[in-house]
Image 1 (cartoon, one colour):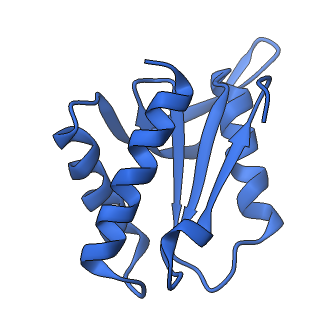
Image 2 (tube, helix red, strand yellow):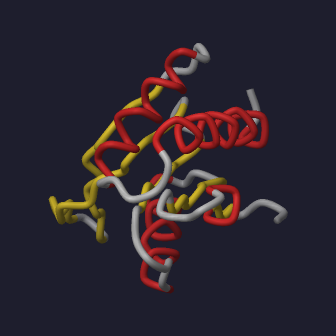
Length: 127
């Protein structure tokens, strides 16, 4: 599957989770439920994947963790905050660069309509 096909499935799963739970819960709650929905859709999904930082010949365990990694092609960063800030966008851009992945989704479940809280983030691919 392409990144775009995975993203379409992921957005549908995000909408389903938000429809069931609504806004106002902890990020971890949405993360677990989204993991369930993506797995139910037949995707290989990993949660809280440690991401080391490689600098020249040094590998640093810097504490970075990918919230949800779908098929090792799509990174999903889950938030439940009042407002997304530039640091949230910078975080997912960094994860895309460190993994050499091309597409990520930043989702804020703390929205009345979750579709308003989903941002597509591209790395080396057309927006």
